[in-house]
Amino acid sequence: MKPPILGAAPQAISVSRQEASAGVDVYGDYATLPVPKSELRSTLNIFMVYMGVLAVIAAIFAGSGLAQMYDPLTTIKVSLAGNALLALFGGLIAYIGGSTRANTYMLLRYPLGRLGAAIGSLIVSGIPLIIWFAVETWLFGMTVNVIYPHHALTSIAAASLWGGLLMMLTAYYGFRAIAVLSYITVPFWYVLVTIGFFAAIDLHGGFNALWKAKPPHPAALSLGITYVFGVYAAGSVITSDVARYGERKWSGAAAWSAHVLIFMTLLLFAGAAMTILTKSPNVIVAIAQIGMGVGALLLAILGQWTTNDNNLWSASLAWINVTGRLTKRQWVLITGVIGTLIAALWGGYYGMSMEPFIKFGVELGNFIPPVGAVLIADYYIVSRILGRRYTFGPGTRYSIANVPGLLAVFLGGAAGWLATHKGLHLPTGVGTIDSIIVAFLLYLALALTLGRAGVRFEIGEWVERPTGF
Image (cartoon, rainbow, N blue to C red):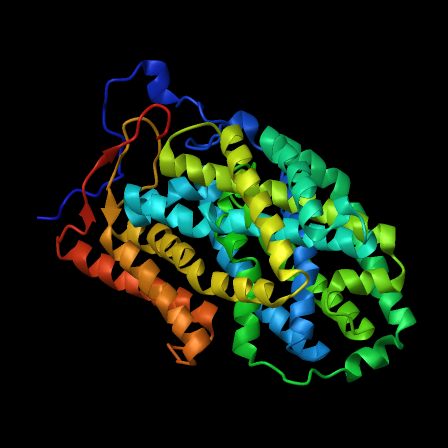
């Protein structure tokens, strides 16, 4: 006899009728509850929020990293390959969010269990997005220091401190503030990037000089694809955080795929081109050499603000789902202060070195994708075959831990790391792809084999309360 599938129809517990039909949003921004119909937004709105996340100096900094590894044509190929994978991967997860109206950390309760979802939330967002906030705040401090050096308030450490505090504002006020800021700043930001790109072309030998450039020590294509995916790995797995607000199930998937495949590829190439032509160590120095001093500062402020507020917002949702304590605004302040202090210390220690940024992007490309791979496998295949629906609400029962899901996440990450650092072809030799394939197939094999054999692979039981926790 097969065991009951956990997380199926909500079970009765002692709550009022009103609470039973709709949870109580005690944490803010529906951190533990599905988004109600009254809060849904247009596909254009969702697209602009994603574009605001991408409008970040780290995206063109990532292009600087590629410029140190490849010639321009190879940079385009690597960018397209990595971004096509991001478009497909993040689009599938965004559709889950649009269909269920639930954020990433709620969705993970099914493929990982309640305790496993807490672990997955820390891997995907709780910890990496604090570090991302620190990285991008450090890049902001670097930008200010390049343009306005020799002042106490414009050292990398000092600018990281006051810049980080500035970026916490819209995250504190939530999704509406993030969307408004995106509408205001995104067009201006992309205009500045375009101007910088064509100015570099005009002042440094034109396209002929660009296409002739060759790096002294080209890197393997697999490393570049893993790096490109890693730069946006956390974003691709948490696409449902924004997609759950879409008025149609496919709004988030369409918006995500379009913005990452087209615009991220362009940003990576622009950053690489400016770095190659100016022979500068990073793209901010390149922009400053072109003569866009004030423009570069505006680029940093607008780009970092529209992305870092989203980093803190998603990190706060993750920590609420891990702890069940404090509100979204309180977690924004906590994670923001931690990230700002890390940025200041990082700026004081590393200065302008690109080495930690590249290493961080590669490791994210190994360890975050397996979480999304297991979610995709569970929602689209395992749950449908075993007759389980993704439902949320007071009284819904979840397992404490989904053993195959947790095994797949950790072994998938290990496969990606081995492919990247040891050159093992398991099965492709591209860290990001290996981590996804291994996690996806391993979870399918274990969950379906055990489920069909009637073997219980989910441990314990946890019942959702009216607060959604």
